[in-house]
Length: 295
Ligand code: ASP
Image (cartoon, rainbow, N blue to C red; front, side):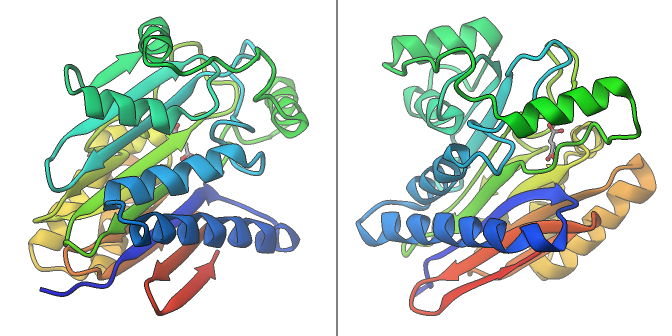
């Protein structure tokens, strides 16, 4: 079976003002291109999603790594996960103190394979033990993140929801799928709060036989629905990814009261992009077929 290597990237469900959309779409396109390049150089779908998400973690425009949303106490607590659809291995970290690339730490968790999910101090210890240097205490904190926290604490109607979570799904030439998601979570979240993003089945899922999915949006709702797994199962049940994305997101809103978005890849590279929020920046890159972006 010959498949076209594909990378789909999202930059978070939420609302982005029209004048701010182009720079986010450009960043998503650049990340998707880097994912494709990783596969061109012999990397797997898992390498592609790791590369694409790490690039967006570096970008202060997004709520992941540099630019992460702040907790109620003004701290950074990072969540990230990824899954390899061929081996069905996964790795995740949650409530991780500041490190530049939580997704690379999640990747190290996957590679080591002893456990799947590390949290808080234990996640930091795992990272140190595997050669990751912690970021300086304020290195990931942007003015924008401080302003959003201040607005949320003033309770002036500012939504706690930061938007700007990042994620990627990819298909490589061998037909393997992978998915990854990274976030700072919601603005002014309570210490220790964990949403869907680092939870396999809720925020991230990949299985070569089913599909690959990264979710963004109302994390409490997606945790209850297990949105990423549900979307992949819908594709395996014969729905086109586009239809599956729409149906699962509608069910999330109807049954769990949550607004969200997701990106979904089927086993042959069929793409589904859906969101019930006002915007979700995204990019779709197919080898030899260019890159499309949207919001
Ligand atoms: N789902 C993320 C969380 O709840 C937030 C988001 O995607 O905007 O932490």
